[in-house]
Image 1: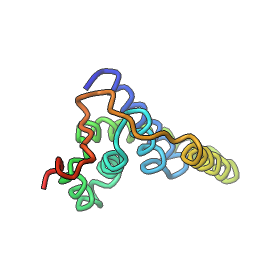
Image 2: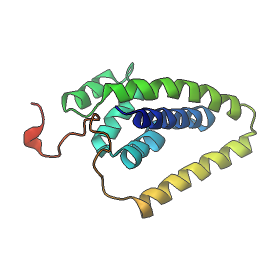
Image 3: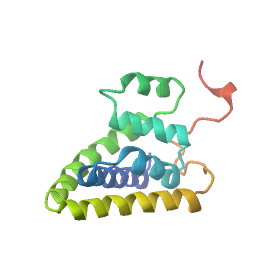
Length: 145
């Protein structure tokens, strides 16, 4: 994994953590699109990685299913998890200093931006820029049994 990839993973984890602490979102809304758009993950790999970060203690069976199919890169999970914890702390500090009205507006704006991006600007999945990140083949014959 390159230094640039590690820095990008830390940044995505930090932003997701801040938004999680700030407005209670992060995994599906921030990490999944970021992994697909910025790191070239396949959708299922991004979802599996997000589950690994967010739900490992309570979603262990779901994580295990994604892992069996080759859709989780644990190096990515651990790096982003560390940044997510720090970001969650920062975001919660910010949120606790904002009024409920301001929090509702921040939440609505984030949801609108993400939905507009997904509706109008989503591109097809691209190849991973880092060959050390395992992006499984979409061919069912290449998946472990």
